[in-house]
Image (cartoon, rainbow, N blue to C red):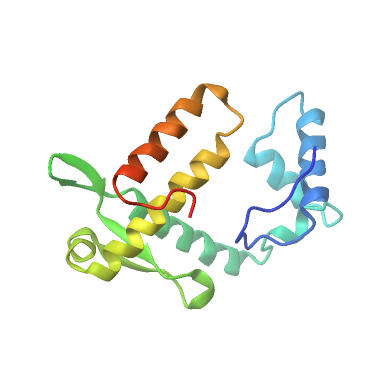
Length: 158
């Protein structure tokens, strides 16, 4: 199988070597690949996965806490017009000084933030279509999404 990093990925290392190694671990563990298996292997200095991790415990602990904050803010919900929606939305890039979280009401009141969120959701839809392109059962859904976006005035595939 051919491997490569997703566009805009911040991962480093040779994707082919890493993918091949993960496949090896999958085979070696009887068709099972878990996070624990990957971390245990990555802890070995000669593993191709080793450099993908921060092995300094203090630094790694802080990164984990940041990840937890992102998880908490990404899963905290509120009610809006009878639906459960995210209470906070992240804006900005980690590489450019960090993500700034804004509450739903602020996003709804700001035309700029609304537009950024709309574009983000459209990119997510496009990535979902890409991720599921190998499933013929979803092709009708892909086409229905494209028709709905076109009818709403959004550029499909842009």
